Image 1 (cartoon, rainbow, N blue to C red):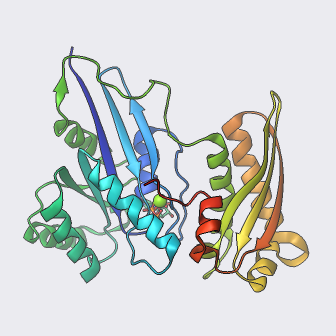
Image 2: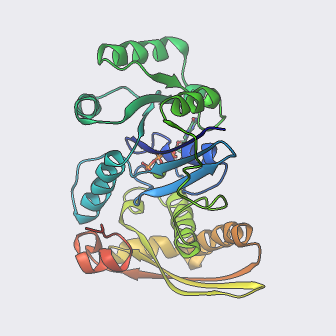
Length: 299
Ligand SMILES: Nc1nc2c(ncn2[C@@H]2O[C@H](COP(=O)(O)OP(=O)(O)OP(=O)(O)O)[C@@H](O)[C@H]2O)c(=O)[nH]1
Ligand SMILES: [Mg+2]
């Protein structure tokens, strides 16, 4: 028997579909997904184990220029994932064009990376062939050879991507898996619960509010038949607070109801969820708040 083990960093611009892909390939929902940019903030491991291999995908925040301390935290996570990876999947939203920022990033990634790079052209279910060919041409002039068009949503061509990833991982005669076989993420239930609230808030809120919110779990009691959760949705302005609460509390109720349903599906028990909205001005610049909300790099 021979075995394979490896870390696969999943990077790319916000909204490219990184979290969707990691969830699809690991057959588990390890990361929240939303139509808004910059949904993922922490590196999240999604682990797929079979009898022959263990693949550890590292979902990362979307690449963007740092404007505040939270951005710096997110960008540092991306660099650390790239640094520790055997294979880097660089995701491109094939409905978009490759802009200068992405072009420069890809060029420098190619120069500095030790691991294998696979370019994943995602969302092919949304794009016409001629557009796809144009992007493929552009990528080959950049010198990338491994390009896989896929749809992380429908799973189209995901098998070819898996084959290519496995091709680049070294073979071992001993079982060299680093994680327990039933371990599918490095994140705690408490983290997942807070992310579920953020996912629903991202989904329902518009404009600039989603980027300025955080969810802080203040009570978490897991009993055999009930999970009790209290959480603060943190925002930056009083005007945002009113929008998150909504007319007669309609918005917060909608967020809460949807979040509770997902939590119940995750833990398999009833969930009692209470949400509060708090204003913490400029929390994205405040190291104490960032630490409290779990946005701190270990160094
Ligand atoms: N049609 C289609 N939609 C997709 C596909 N992959 C992802 N999406 C959608 O694209 C949006 C963004 O997906 P995410 O997985 O959150 O993207 P991300 O790259 O993790 O984004 P950040 O965490 O913000 O960096 C969501 O609305 C997904 O449903 C795809 O292959 N096809
Ligand atoms: Mg994401």
